[in-house]
Structures are given as C-alpha cells and as structure tokens.
Length: 158
Image 1 (cartoon, rainbow, N blue to C red):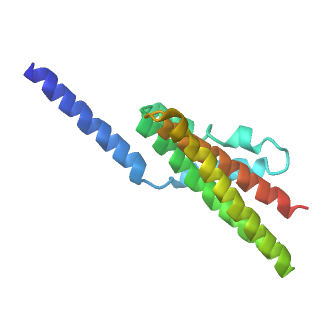
Image 2 (image 1 turned 120 degrees about the vertical axis):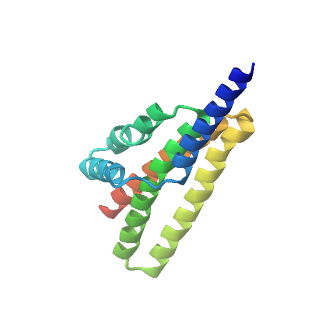
Image 3 (image 1 turned 90 degrees about the vertical axis):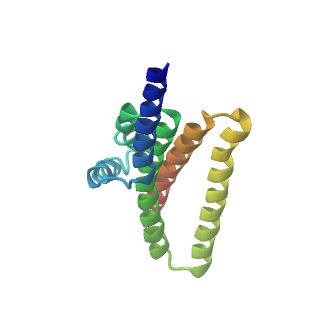
C-alpha cells in the first residue's frame, strides 16, 4: 500500500513539473521560426491555417504531455507566436491606412473580433463544464488567433 502512495506522489510531482514547464515557458526560437516561416510561405495561397496552425508546435508539444493541462499549455505556447504575428500584421495594416476614420474602423473591427474570440472560445466551458473545456478553449483561441493573423495580412494586400 505504501508503495502505491509513493508511486502516486512521484507521478503527481512529475506531472506538475511538466505542466509547470509548459505553463511558464515562452515559445522557443526554433518554434517561432517554424511558424513564421510557414506563415510567410502560405501568406497568399489560402492554406496558411491548414498548413501552419497546430502541426508545427502544438502537436509535437502534445506528444510529450498529452494531459488536458499539458495539451492546453501546448496550445497556449503556439498561440503566443500567432499573437505576435497578429500584432505585427495589425500594426502594419494600421500604418498602411492613412485616413484617421479608416484607422478608427480598423480599431473597432479588432475590438469586436477580440470580443467574438473570447465569447466563442469561452463557450466551451459553459457547454462542457469539465476538464476537457480547458484544452478545447485553448485550441479555439489558437485557431482564431492564427486565422486573424492571416486575415490582417491579407487585408494589407488590398
């Protein structure tokens, strides 16, 4: 019986170490490069989300820790990369717009999108009310952020 307790404690410690690592770490330089290179390659072909999101960073990360918390953390790590790209694309688009009223419309559009993303992705909790809602919410945030990054880049070319 004591052996089972020791094994359970060891498993809990190992789980918390791997989860804490994923929760607290920033994307590695090679992970960021993978996503940026893929996004640049697929910027105009409409395949960016399908080719770049999840496959290059989140999925390999999940293979190392497939727990609900570990999976959510892997999605969050990749979302940070997409969020950086999104913010760069937003700034570039804003700089390309000369008219103040049009810039205000871009700000309004982006604020509405943030509310949409948060409301949509948070709905997983309200629908599921369980531990699966954590990775599903994180996956939704990743997916929506990657999509938006590509949309803002596309709008620059119009």
